[in-house]
Length: 521
Image 1 (spheres, rainbow, N blue to C red):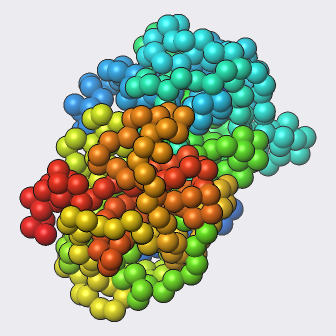
Image 2: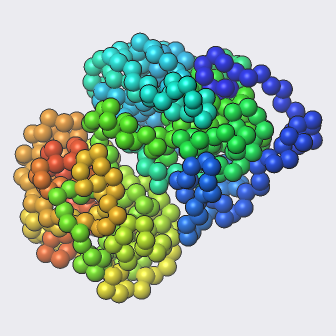
Image 3: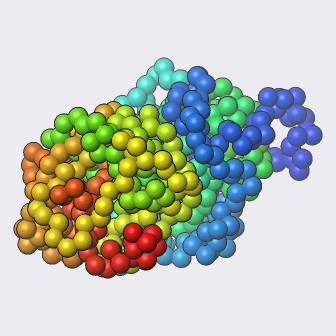
């Protein structure tokens, strides 16, 4: 999918058969280094002028990874090097913006795309065919104010644009929002899925059917050494690179503004590149996490993953079962080798245990992810539960211990803990928080006129919280504890403190039986 991914502007190139032995060889003497295993999974949270922090993490070597394990999910692995998607419900957040750009739905009234895509009159949603989706007008365009700054560090810096729609979208299986990533999601080696209707080869025709390609995030050091215009040491902290050094897979013309997604979170949008799948080069994406505050200021209504409001600091000794799952979600220890969290939190590689500081606890590798087989079957968050099998047995202490799962009557008052936002549109808390919430009658929650409430809640859910005490952004999967036992885990809600939050009912007989079957607990 993208040449210089700005609609019609493409830098023409000729691709040598052996790029390391051409006249470019002198210019590429500082070309990307061969990946070492320890380069992967570093947090890409620094700017492009400073070294990247390398935390202590259980690493996975992506150097030979090509997504073969998802062959059945995506189809034949061929955007450039991509595949035609089988169904729009796999990528319901993707929109066509005008006739030559993409974008991502972030709420019923808002879409995000690239600043360089300019102002167009409409988007199309709900279809994998470029001209068949429902047409929705754009009420107003909000291009990032620094996109047009005269003195920018890079021509494509601040390549962001928000689209306010003329009418709210009607969510269904093929039209859904995507959560905005946090900076902690930006992990080198993580494979992102990029979608679009752009060219399937450089200077070729647009695709009529939405296509997807999977490419790994590349270290800034490697990308800065690409010897083409707009790369060589010029990339900024609002950009990241993804692709393969040998080319073969990339975005191309017409994919600009299209989403780059991993684990159901929007990490970036197609911004620019040199040619399409050019050997020795990579695609460059706008890092969405870097402008979360701007997005929140403009939209003032984003709903993210859940966490805590109205709470207080708590020590880990008071909640030794609490874990940080992948620095994104919460979770609960239920055994020396098992933790539990929500299915929608995705598949991360580790948990942190034994510390009330969000990023300080030692990491324990997760080697098994068991999502309930009926997850999402009647409701997007039905059976929203996942078991995490740990690489090693934990040594229990006063700061690391499990909690018993409630069977039967679990009471109506719950202690909920997590590191999430203390207020809506805030940011993660560094110190573990806890709040007491009271159960709310399910009929009251069924009457809430929001898409995932409104008489759609199931018996695998319960409702708790109010306008001053609630779960909020950032800590889905955190435990709801009653009478010293685990009754539920934080699942979803609308904003923070607006309506009661929804929890997965761990004591429900179908979920309880499933847990016992796999863990023996």
